[in-house]
Length: 275
Image (spheres, rainbow, N blue to C red):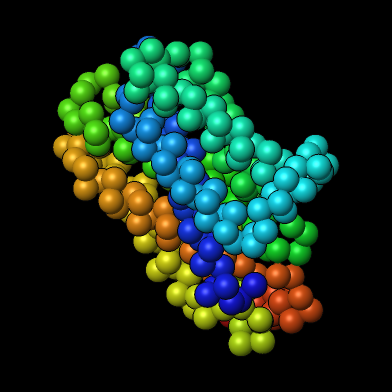
């Protein structure tokens, strides 16, 4: 898992799909809280999600593989993701189409939001693999919380200084808490020259910090002080960095890694005793 160039289609797919589903889910939250879902952001969410799934189909090579993957629904995390992706896009398209036709349906929007949120959770679950040290724990939640944060930032930035949209501040804050735990887990992993990890691990602090500030911290304060569309640009970059970091910082449990972990603990014990 050190060939980050080979992960470019996955970075593109997950970045677009997470952004799109997060925006649809955020629109559904606004529907629940204020009784309407803005048609523009809802359509943008549909477009982003559709683009992401198009990239995914191209990456599969053969479109029929997606249909075959659905057969394992309920047993396979990948099958669940494929099934939920199709349902998420279908419901989002119906909700967006009704909104643009001037006949919005709050029930359809909420249903689309729920299914899209489930899809975001499935994206995290599909990578929960035994032996992958950085793809478990709080990493499972970051597609959901990061997508919702992006969606909230789009809504808040588009609405400007609308006092009723202050709820959007909650979602970047939640994502910041979740991601800070993922950051802590990655930072705690020992790394040495003997550990088979990508060169990104040498710059993991900078990469994680850039994601944290661009997707969460800076947009949060912009929304709180003076909402502006530029926050959307920063959040989009932050979300892309999240996906780059997810694949680039993959670290598989190996004998070399376990040795490095033991050496790290021995060094820490030596420092604590003053030797």
